[in-house]
Image (cartoon, rainbow, N blue to C red; front, side, top):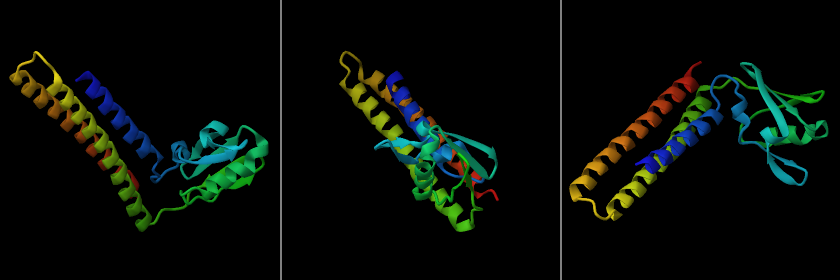
Length: 177
């Protein structure tokens, strides 16, 4: 059961991280977590080559550690699938967030539901592995296995409920104008 909870926690945490990278009404440094930059001959995560801050609700500031790589960072942000238009001012890249329209909000809600489903799948896999482990136990009565399976199902339902709550919260945040 402990291993199962640990695995389910990992699935829940992964879903939270994914939700944080989905854009809502206000700027968040986590929005750029998926951006990869071609630097020094290899692909690197943006947060490894620059500091990212959100000083205002509609603007993200990206400051590359190596000032000579400003153009590469700007290009990576522009070419990401986030639909952002960065502009360079000195050694700092400003990324203004455009106002979201109703259609874009609905698309983001669909993305959130897909990410949530991935989290639910991880929780279901953890339950399946735990159930298989319970069935392989020797020297345990069938009744004990049945009780353990019921407890396992309760834990599973709790985690699925947590993911559903996260969906509702993120959906409300995205649809808020």
